[in-house]
Amino acid sequence: FDVSADTLVSALKAAGVPRLLVTGGAASLERAPGVRVIDTPDFPAEWKDIALGGIAFLDALRTETEIDWTYFSPAALLFEGPRLGSYRTGTDQLLTDANGESRISFADYAIAMVDELEQHRHSRARFTAAY
Image (cartoon, rainbow, N blue to C red; front, side):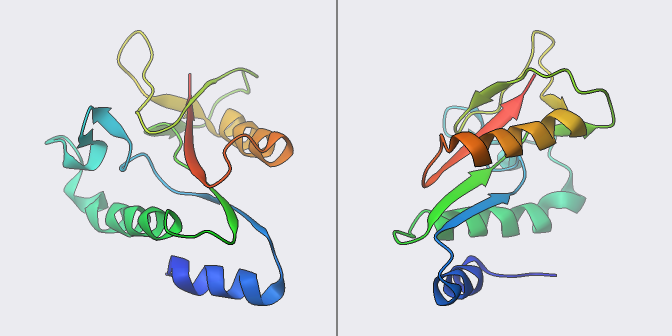
């Protein structure tokens, strides 16, 4: 199911919905200054098309001024695991741990989304979360 940002934003405006929290992927995050995860040689070719769709969606949202949007780019690796209850947040850079891994459990991923809904820290911006 593919919905463009323009289609979704138009529907939100027509319905009078003032806020959007959407999740994408880590591909658009910077691995190094000016180098996105998708641009690195180890990015899986089979994920590129869907990742480019998410990047286009984020780029379109960045031009939106009426809807209060937030785009969540979680860690590169999501895994089934316990809720630790703590994670780090950032904006445009891929967060990695001491081992160079970018990861977060599905449980803490969900909490990061709920925390953003409740605390509204990233108005018209993207954020990321990882251990």
